[in-house]
Image (cartoon, rainbow, N blue to C red; front, side, top):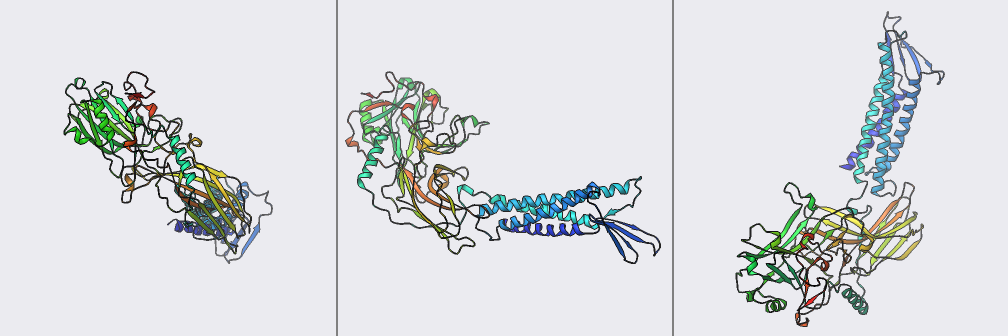
Length: 625
């Protein structure tokens, strides 16, 4: 449809230029007929260049205007405007001819051709305004003299040339407007790059050095020691009225794609503080796409993806039958008869914990996927929950890099140019499919420039693509690292070079819209890991899906402007899977820690829940019992 519109606009510009040229040379810009006998009847007419008189016998005599400076001002201006209109119309046709989508002239990309078409449309519109002003001004003077009772000369009427000028102006303006519709394709959508689609070629992955792999895993475990402790740590949080206390053995739950770690813990109740109320526990997954202060008129900018509720006290079944882990059994023995276990299983269609980084000036909760365990006491499950009688613990659902990696990705692209017998060939490859956070990414680039063009610059970047697929189909593409060294490749030359990129959150903390793992404001937050979706699960319910790609852009110079040759290499950016710690290897003694925001770096917490959830003693240090 856009091609037909642009072609129609070009044809209208061409017809407009021809009509405007015919109007400029037409003799009848104004005409007057004097009636009398057959012998003396005559007709007078003028245009911008001469005045003529024609008798009844058809014999015409014309007299050219002798001096340009002696002419009235409106005739001088009309001459200039009509000539400018023809020149601008000619320029508009030449530029738009190179820019319309249906004509293949030059080596410019679709993006550059769209810009040329828009430029031609603007020239056509401006060129159409010139004859419009000239004809209207000339017609105004003719009408003014005709109705002037004190005018002593010949009274003329509007001639054919004026109508032709108006038609040419209208065609030029309409044709230019149609050409300007090419602005819809002037910029690539969703961070893509225009040009011939690259051909993907996958090669076998080279075996990695086991010593280096083990070193990376050790480094990763040492950096994440506070997140996945081998000690038998139990997190604790108490509600404000001291009626309910929650104990959990971990806060990170791993999504293995085919299964997810279950959520388990223990609730300790105070029957005297409960005063006959029941105790419930809920596990929820919430997708938030607006701040709290935007929740007006009862419309919350959030959507519950999952909600499950269990009654813990009074127990509906034997507590011993609901014990699923060794940590739960230890807690029940240690905490006494007032302790009751709870257990949840994640469904297989929930997203992982992801949040979109706000700008430094934004406040409140932003777009994020959050998981939460909430324990509360109430008369019944659907009763209004008092804040002092509830306790909330933010959890995290994470994914780690798969143990078996796929083939190392490699992409090739070939571009042919007009006036070049041989093409430009480019190949970009990575040494593996999965990279760990904080690991350099080496991009191997091979360019063979057999064309007559010169590559003026090479830009290599790592782009993060975050697709918000739940409430819309928005896609946010952000470059999280870029390298532009000004490399060039002349015609007939070649280039082989390795570019090293290191995508880190530390270099992108002030940028809005970057997808992150967990909380946005803490030091140990990192860029969001790549999303892995189980086959058969609808992507529309995954909230925010994150992917990464290496983008290589070759800026090729040309007579009609620069063009781009783009290559995109997808890869995964994730954390390595830590060594599994068996429950039998954990220490027998339980180490209790207050489940507070100081231990939840990387999580979306509730600021207002901090108060009242601290037991006596040093809250920042682990307590052994």
